[in-house]
Length: 254
Ligand SMILES: C[S@@+](CC[C@H](N)C(=O)[O-])C[C@H]1O[C@@H](n2cnc3c(N)ncnc32)[C@H](O)[C@@H]1O
Image 1 (cartoon, rainbow, N blue to C red):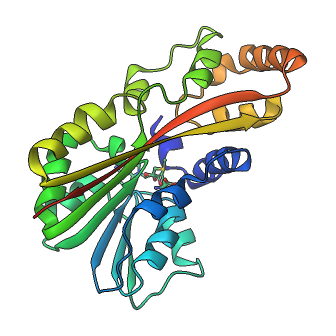
Image 2: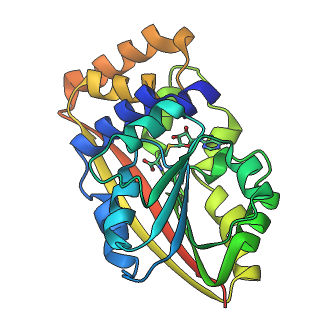
């Protein structure tokens, strides 16, 4: 699981299979909600990946200073070589998020993370530390899956006999409620929650397969069985629909 979670190429392929046929552009959706600010803010993005949200952040908070953190140096290099990257204002940090947030002396006005917090090895401690590194009036923004997110793809994959790890299912269903919201409700002074449903339509077996092969729940031993199942599915169906449930949480400290 860990390798595909960090591998830059796997991340690009998964994003590509989702973005090709998605109904809602979730980054546009989120940044239409997040309030824009033109003053200088110190911003930390955790698990920035290949910079899909980093670019939006840089345009949304034009006069700010950014730290983009990820465990994958390959992904950070993509961010660093992107046209939006301004070396005078932006910095990459190739470190584990737990060790960085738990030890940094820096303070931030915004900590942003999309689809990454659940990779923490100690989420309770990480959430406390995020709260501590936020300045007064600081904002913690989290985007991630919740509820019965991905249920169609899980059902199809498990129909082969493969049992998807509980931890993986937890991260994309209850994690936002039990860990993130639970903490934010207790500790932050203002909390806003937004939700959207995204429908991803895969038009053929290979689009389905490409996504699965690059996911954290891929298992080589079930490859031929799954190919047989999806080929049979596409003999009678024109597309496979997968539902993504996305939550955006904006929590403010006073
Ligand atoms: C699913 S991707 C999300 C990327 C991006 N935020 C997005 O939504 O497109 C998760 C990212 O978290 C990074 N990651 C995983 N574990 C991490 C850790 N312990 N510390 C820092 N980054 C980590 C991975 O390298 C990957 O880039």
